[in-house]
Length: 83
Image (cartoon, rainbow, N blue to C red; front, side):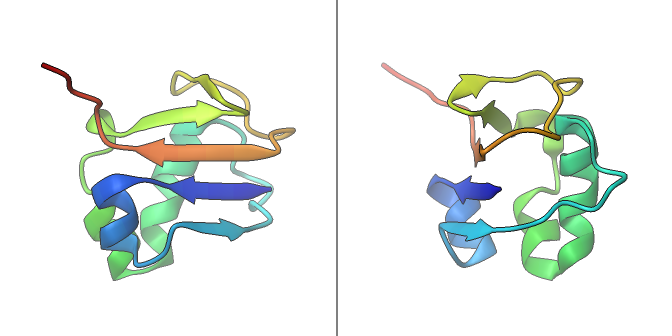
């Protein structure tokens, strides 16, 4: 599956996308946001407050209980603001 990072999430992680095989225990968006910071300091810094991270699974906004086991693409980005 492809993970895509946007805005300051991308800047803090250090790259914009990666192809990855999720561990078997990661089955939901919430599980993903718990697991990713374990991958290194850059991920821990970028995802220190998972409550503010927005996630899209296959280009659809997703809640923390959304299934990621069959996703082709998951995007992580900060809250979108407008004016």
